[in-house]
Structures are given as structure tokens and as C-alpha cells.
Amino acid sequence: MQLSTNQTWLLRGNKIAHGPFPITSGMPGYNTPIGKFPVLRKVKDEWSKPYNGPMPYSTYFTHSGIAFHEGSLTQPSHGCIHLARGAAATYFSELSIGETVQVVA
Image: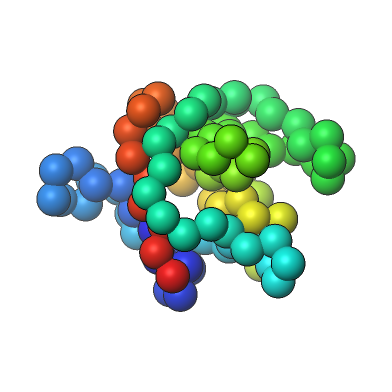
């Protein structure tokens, strides 16, 4: 995904399999981390305890709780990557534990 363009896509090999999809990412003070990360776990009906809100179709890729999930495409996040419902469901179903997520500025 590319934070500067607010877009993400899924690659299979060197070809785009899904996307690009619009995203929102971390607000100032809650920056989304840059780098390569493995998919760690997935929780379909997640609830954020720290921020008291739903996180449907959460696909976690950091140990600090950063995930792709359904969320607002107009409001920045607390570090997660917000996707529209359909895109979040696609990421949830298509990404496997251990696959690499790459976040670039």
C-alpha cells in the first residue's frame, strides 16, 4: 500500500489481483508504520478496546495492533488502514497468515 496516494492493492506474483482500493491511515501522533510485515492474525468481528469501536474484517500485521479493517474513508485512524466494507472483506479472505504486507510512504 502507498500512504501518500491513499491506495492499497493485493498482488499475486507481480500482477494486481484486487484494487487499487482507497484507504485512510494514521492521523498525526498515530502514524501507520512503514515497512514489510507478516500477516499475524485475522478476526472477522473485532472490537477495539482502546478506542471502543468496531473493527470488522481485521487483518493484523503488527504486534502493536495495526490492521486492515473496515472503517471511515474520510476520518484518519489510530494507525490502522481503513478500507470500505467490500475491500476489507476481500483483504480478510484473500490474505493468509504469514503473507507479506508492504507499507510505503
